[in-house]
Image: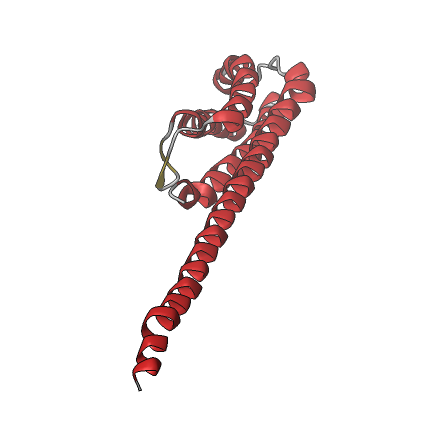
Amino acid sequence: LDAAKHDTHFVNVAGRQRMLAQRVMLHAGMSQVGRERDRRSLAGIVGEFDQAQRALERGGYVAGAMLPAAEGEVRRALGHARAIWDKIRPRLRLEANAPLGDPGTLDRYLEHEIPRLTAAANRVVQIYDVVANKRRDRALVGVIAIAGVELFLFVLGLWLTRQFISRPLMALE
């Protein structure tokens, strides 16, 4: 149950990674046509994506709350997103710092790698959702098992009370 308290925050941060990947595509595209404001925004988005990716992978404080380090399938999905991100981040930083009027070199990445990053970020959310649902299902089975044991003990207590207390008292009368 302790892990479940982080579910909402993890999904919010991982979902935000999807949105940031889409914003990277938008701002990188606009920076290529010479929009200085988009170049500055792109630099900020790259930093924000980096910080959140690290927190999702290793645990840490992000978006106002602490996240534990990812494990298992979620960690592998984050690793896949990290591999794509590590491949395109240097190009994005070059684009963000390119002089105004420089045509940039992101065409291939805009068309191929950034959508892959968005898909990988989406996959992280999907896998986390599956893992969280499995965890909730296990917790529900545990609660049902405990309730079953408690019901058994209650019925046993009633039977024992009847056998060893009520009947002997009725026999005395």
